[in-house]
Image 1 (cartoon, rainbow, N blue to C red):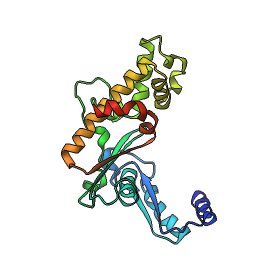
Image 2: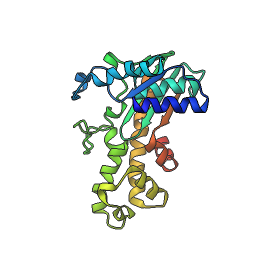
Image 3: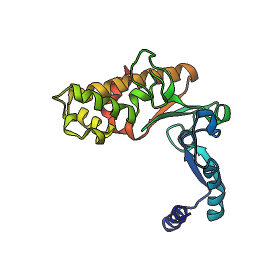
Length: 231
């Protein structure tokens, strides 16, 4: 309520009218399907009613990648297109799909788990979900940082060794790659190639007019990864 009230005051001070509010989250409507245990599973579903009471406006609970693709389709790079995919590359990897002007949610709203497609079952890195060969294990911020921590122990002349392992982030790796660090470049190149394979799969499955990439990790290593993704 405090955060919502502050946002309401901010909106009023900037002069932008509010037509509605929304809450973004990262999992599906049925938490049991993906094995997530919330201390109070009802909490996220009570928030829309609370915000509705504060703003006196419609409030929607929606998955973050679904909200992102709807925003790009309506207001951004996907305008005037009927087949749009938005991919977020952040701490995790996910996707939102618009097909024939309809948001594709999947059964019980847990579609779009793009990070959990198998790039190569023989790959050794374990995804946070516990399985191997998933895209998220190699191209997400969490996966990139985990790989860098392990590899920097082996490669002593990397600038990544100057950073405390527990504090090493994908942002650090992207900056080292831009500065010419060979280990960082190798890790980013691998992430870009894996992401490129995944995007190729999306193109084959959905035949979209456009795929829009976003998220903090993608924006951080965009200058170097662009070529790797293209390959």
